[in-house]
Length: 116
Image (cartoon, rainbow, N blue to C red; front, side, top):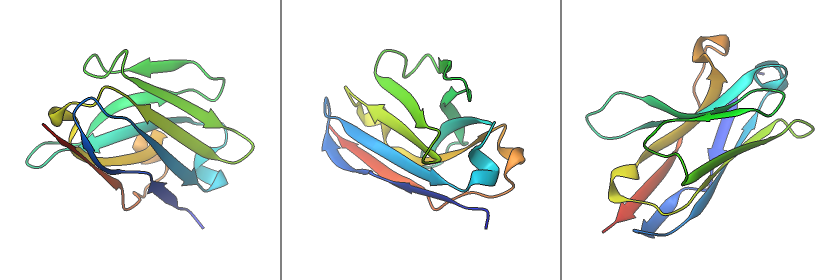
């Protein structure tokens, strides 16, 4: 079964931290780069961080230095540690392969809300 299950979001004050998790089916995870995307109200979904199967990482400028992506290849899980959160980080966060057309599906996402 092809699936993505995100968790770990919540409501935090500006400056706070969260750790997001994503359990992926092996057909999506294995051998593929995995990324975290986010979609804020009224905006397009954007890729904020991704990690190759070998562990190299890339970040959008808006999150560089604050977010850290990691993966557990044994558990088909990808994580996103989000620190120093800002109100503009408020969005629904999704994980998926990079590029996302590799999977053909999206999970339900996890809501991150940052209050000022």
